[in-house]
Every structure is written in structure tokens, then in C-alpha cells.
Image (cartoon, rainbow, N blue to C red; front, side, top):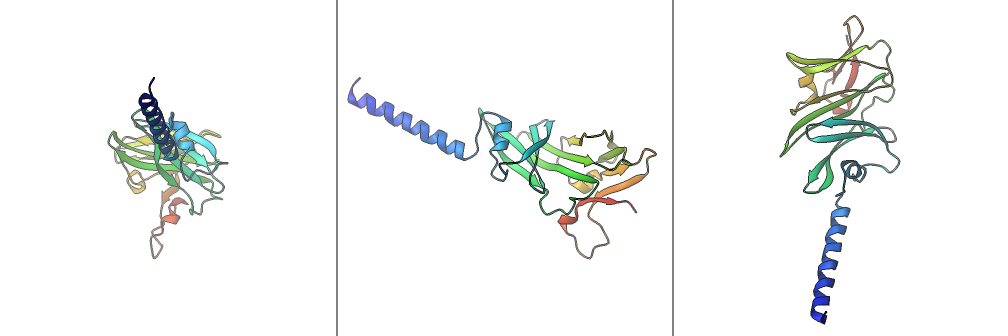
Length: 195
């Protein structure tokens, strides 16, 4: 090989290495889980507590120190990247017996999805129900299992009106911001006892 060919090979190789390094630093990975783990806001000691399959791919819920982070990776060509996330940081529900540990509503070029993942520790809660109008879904609460709802549309929490029910159908909790507050504070969006 002549000197000119060697320079071309070296240039192309260097260019490819630089491009791959930039893509790696931007969070691109070979799998959705690896992309989620590379998310900028995910702490190193986070624990994966729930994975949910959706029409747009997997959604991961990680437990951080005192809050949860929901991450949705997206496929870009042959690689994965996780640009979408939602956190529960700042929500004062650490001692609550029912918590929304994961929630996400997103629209991409491939479609839309809404996910809610609920952790129930109140033994009186036997069902969780959510959905819009006549398309509500009721799920049984099982010990040590999260309750998850997935919709292929972008909904806000008040549109799906989540409620927690006793075995007799009595509403025990509502997922909402209390209406008796003088102002609306998103940090109060959590499960409140029904009145």
C-alpha cells in the first residue's frame, strides 16, 4: 500500500472512532436497557424496580435515593437512546401507603404512550382503577407486585382519574392534587384519602 492509501485508512478510522465516541457520550447504546442506564439523571446506585412493555418499547422505573425515575428509551437507526424521563423528586409521598412510582406520557414519531406504575402497601386496597370514561380498567392488587396501566394515547393524570378501591368497591384513595388548596402545587400530586 502506498502512503496516500495509509493516510486515507487512518483518517477514516479516526473519523469513525470520533463519531462512535461522540454517540457514546450522547447516550447511544446497543440495547434499550443500556440506554436507560446511560441516562444523564440516573444515579449510579439506582435500582431497577419495574419494567413495562409498551407499543413504543420498554419503559424502566428506577428507585433513586428518595424518589423514582421513569425512563423511556427510543430506537434511533440501529442504536438506542433515552431522551425521555419523568421523576417523582420533590413529591412528599415517602411515607404514603400507596404511591405512583412511575408515570410517563410521551408522543414520538412512532406514536403515543402513557404509563402509570403504582405501588400499594395498604392491605385494605384490593383494586386500582384508571382510564377514561367507558374505557376504565380495574386491576387487582397483588402482594409485592406493582400495578401498571399502559395506554397508547397521551393522557394527563386527571384524564384517567386513578382511584384505589376496597374489596367492596369503596373508593379509599384518589390520585389528585387537593382542590381545597389556595394554589395548585404539582408536588401535591399523589394519592390522597378519599373524603
